[in-house]
Length: 109
Image (cartoon, rainbow, N blue to C red; front, side):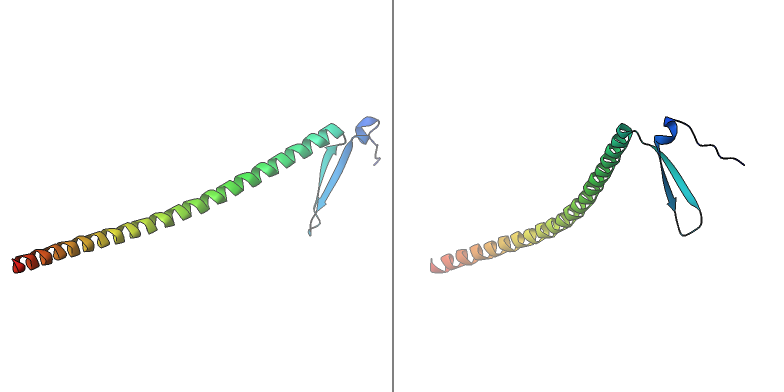
């Protein structure tokens, strides 16, 4: 069997990236050597990575803020309930105080 080389520019404008693992299988990726193609490909890859990283960051930040909001909401409900208890106790004490003062004023009269 004879092997013939591709002639001309087509053979010179391609890069072969060979990826192999622990197993014997290997994969070959063929990339053109065109510099504009390489620049655009690198730009798109960087843009994708930045977009994915930013999206992941915002997703995690949103999750943290949701959890913090839920915790603060629970804390607010507990504080509001405690405040209502304190107000009831205050009104009860004020009523008792006013009755005591009224009783003392009647005793003096």
